[in-house]
Image (cartoon, rainbow, N blue to C red; front, side, top):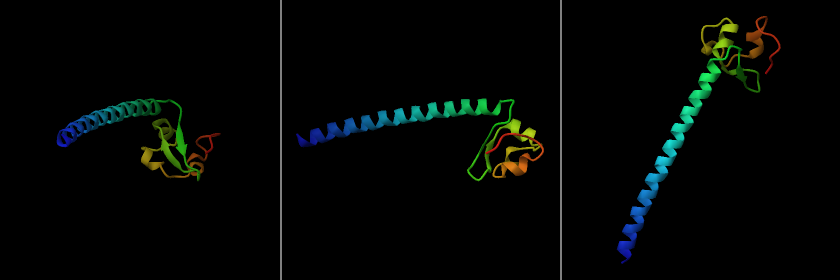
Length: 95
């Protein structure tokens, strides 16, 4: 009897694990889709948008910022101080 219960519980636990794995997978996929939608919105803006850290270094910049700064790719601005890059090119925004 104990062996039958153990087998029954193991089967239920296995099923529960599969259901949980499926829910996690669906959640991850939904998150990936949402992240992709936000990235498309971010990268299609006409105005420069950026995120910088507490030290004023750019962590993320959209293509409009790259163009406004006269650069070819976001790799050229990532990690660089905003004040250095923006001198004479863009006004007002500060980190």
